[in-house]
Image (cartoon, rainbow over all chains, first blue to last red):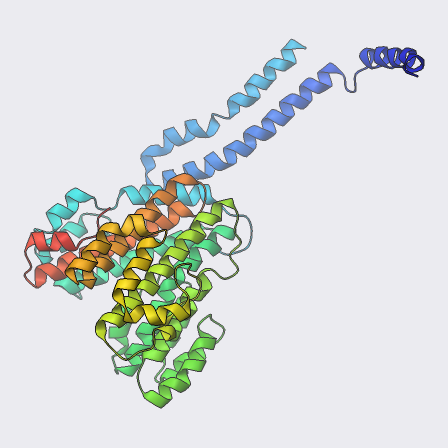
Length: 85
Length: 348
């Protein structure tokens, strides 16, 4: 039984290897997009907390701004993938 | 602002943490207990309480000024929190702050009962709950208790008050009405509370609040020797007592104390409980209950930083601060010495 399937499996594997589900540039684009989405979600929470802190104490503006944009590094790191492929 | 939409714990908690760090600490209290009422008022003018003291300064003086300033500031702070909060968070905070609605209803009813003037009652209100200014001013205008109760229809107090009003008409004392208000408040605390991992702690805190209230009521009834049935004053929802056993416990203080000692609050209250057994003093025990609740709420704030608990912990700390400053001002006015006052304070 197994001997009968083996050639079929070999064919399937070689076919899968030759044509991936999505092309590399598309995958890279997807990774940047998802990273940007995640960064946006993280900034939502940090941003609203920063606004709360700034409303109480104006001096916290700089700290708030820095902390708010920190998740942006996620997108920059994801951008590296674009140059790797 | 409302119970619709998503909740925004990050924003509210950031603001609340900033406000919390502005509360008075050990050092300020040590200074305050050595001041006279006028000095305390000046001290408050230079702190968070500036606007309130300035606004009321022309109308009141001395301890009255401090007390009204404190009440007004507390109301403003808590109203701010309700203004900021949205969605589910609003619901969770409002549950606890309805305490002040209960306070306002009781104040209005007492005012009508004692024929106090509108202004007098108005200065005693703490506008921190959910009632808006329109409802409160209509309540203040009410000339009869029945009228006030009619105005409250549609609020959570309506059913209990209507039932209690008949009792009031029969007996002529306010106790049934006030009792109905308290019970309405405590029973809505846990009603329909959706318990997830985060709100589990909040529920435990609310249960502790109800348990402590029941223990306090039972002890007071036992101590006063009044011929009252403690089950009338029993509040549902706690985990420590059941209505039936409270009746027998209230007559036997030793048993009540050992019951509390064996409960999950035993460790926190052990010192206060032995004091209670020795000293026969209820005041010390009640203060220990307050301190235990505050300590409990304090630890709450750190386990789930983005839930309702840090906010509740701030609300309690603020309430305690207001109580402390009031105790200092009243104590100084009565001529107590600083050490005696310091012992009365609940400082975390």
